[in-house]
Image (tube, rainbow, N blue to C red; front, side, top):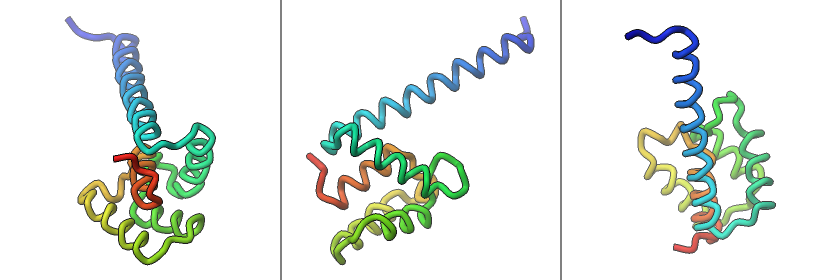
Length: 114
């Protein structure tokens, strides 16, 4: 058969829940692999949300560069690493999720455990 409006609502809702759960799982995995505490992640999330000028829930290359410029005093080698990590994203460089932001932050600041 066909789906009614109520059924379609629930399908969309379930899909949305799955997407959010996946995002959270990626964030937790990245937090653990980078060795960040929950308090650090909360501070990073606040900075991420503030830097997300367009409210998309993701940072563009420009937004992430402004964020690092505002809150971190990067050495020339860290700045080069930041640009390298952003360049590695290719087409995704303007859709940087919070989990990806944590990974980049860990790499640039040397918090990475890999």
